[in-house]
Image (cartoon, rainbow, N blue to C red; front, side, top):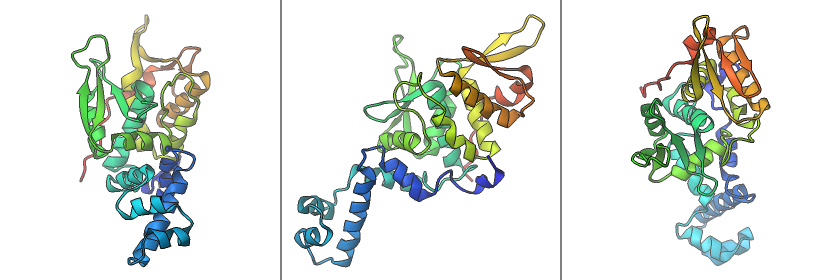
Length: 281
């Protein structure tokens, strides 16, 4: 993690496009390239139809006819959403990037991305900062709604609403590495992109995570610690502890046990804090 990363996204936009497209299928990126080539050919030969295009590009005529009439591969639509909402060009410190980072942390600490639809959901308990969840979605240009609020049998959640909601889940997964489906077996991969963000972004990410997962433990001798108990691999918890140390310093008391990550009192002033998103100025 270096401070010069503050001026650029974790990946070049072209790489983010590929990562996003590949969440659709092995051929997702290939379809994007074929569509782009077809539309360039069509722009250069506006009087020619799908038959000539099919022979020139060696692509099925029916597919080209649909594209020339306005259809698009789903991966292209996702990339269009990412471009129009500013996800591809977002840089650390701006509202969109920090909103994406908060959503990434929330997915890992207290949310999920549906395996079948790729729609993300953020669990919101009584003590959780629901306003931060709504602001994070808004920062990405996506509306949100609160669901299950009056149902005791299911956890209250904040979910994206309207166009682009599955595209957001795919971006969080494909580009930033947030897991899809069950999280108990996740390794260190979901934390990898944090190695390329500056300390200010990492701090906000860590604060989000601790706010959602942390439980205060009062010590008999006075003072307190915060315990993050979760069913994750020890490898994951060690990597998580490394992210905390990168913010508070290697000498701080961050301990990994068989069942939890424990934060010492000397870390809580920085980590046990509800973060705020930057202003959109």
